[in-house]
Image (cartoon, rainbow, N blue to C red; front, side, top):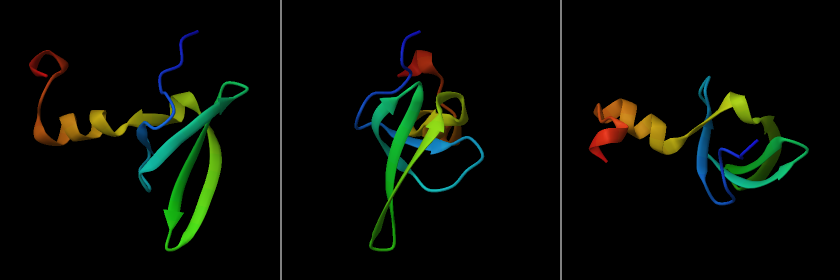
Length: 68
């Protein structure tokens, strides 16, 4: 199965929360990093629980994939 994200992609949980940077995949989970204040956080999530930040931006401004 192809990976939906690559290292450096900006993602967010589908349920909301902070914007995070994809670090790497480990056993089909996506390792993400973000800062909470000045503390670096790092957690892995199932790929299906994440969405690309580009997806969020397109939804907010009302642009489809065809228009980009």
